[in-house]
Length: 416
Image (cartoon, rainbow, N blue to C red; front, side):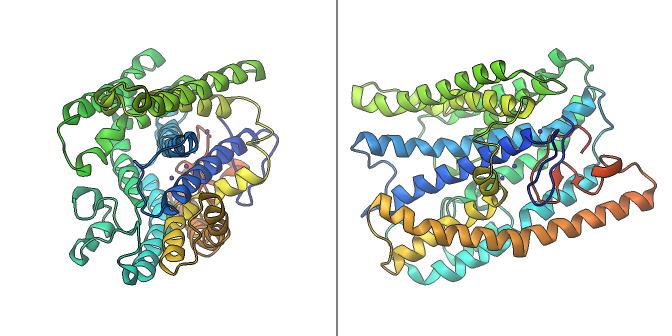
């Protein structure tokens, strides 16, 4: 899970020139909290079902699922920036070896710890409402991020992990996308062909599978989510090397929020109004929201920081958001399995928040940050031994490696 000449320190402090990045951390924190509230509402139902919506509140909370689209847009935006900067001639081409090593260090340790913890905590709770366990023979698929390839494992065990399989697929093809971009003329208009082509491919794919009654193995794929990553990449291309004033930022953010709200309202209102927009929604999915999120992310990345999103609470949650995302459903299911989760969306979600945050913080301080710091030292040593320029040169060289700082967050520097 996830910005022009900035670095971020491991303790989440920012220099004056860097503070806008705190807003992206804040966005990530808000997205993680939104998904947690969505799952809190879902798993406190007597029989958990995302289709069981009868009140305005149910429809509103259900649309918090759109926060996952924000994560995909953020990944497309942040991870593509070094390649886009190189394609525009603003920096040398990224090192694929460094990129692979830092991606692995960021994603794998916490994922495998959470995977093992999910198996240990949930395997004996079969029969708990909302808990879906895969056959034991399907567990190796989770190890290689292949759980979305089988109907027996997709959305099973720890359901949010399906999105990690999509993210890893994007990580795998990003160097190829970057290689293609580096061979195009150094003009924004020409380079825009790459993300726009990916967007079209994703829409066409969703059109081909829409209305055919196919399993989730077809819809929980990178091809289906490609438009979201593509819009993040397009926003990164348009934002590269630019800054905007606060007034323009407010305009872009307002337009982005309006698009997300209109999209959510349309999906909530269609069933009640008797309008059958199933095919349209299946093809376009959450594309309007993704456009809105791309506007918001781009505005936050190239404008002065937001007082709300760039403060302390949301950025701090953004730092531990990966562990929070990985552990919150196991927490909810364990509480449900041992009958300590109140079947009230407000009370149940509130009670599950503290242990979820505690496990997220533990994941960050015990697992994620030590591995990232070790990887940063190794990469710095590799750079020195090879006689190369450090990724940032000078003071920030030990902080940013392959698009992430030692804290594990993607950074907005074009020299990462």
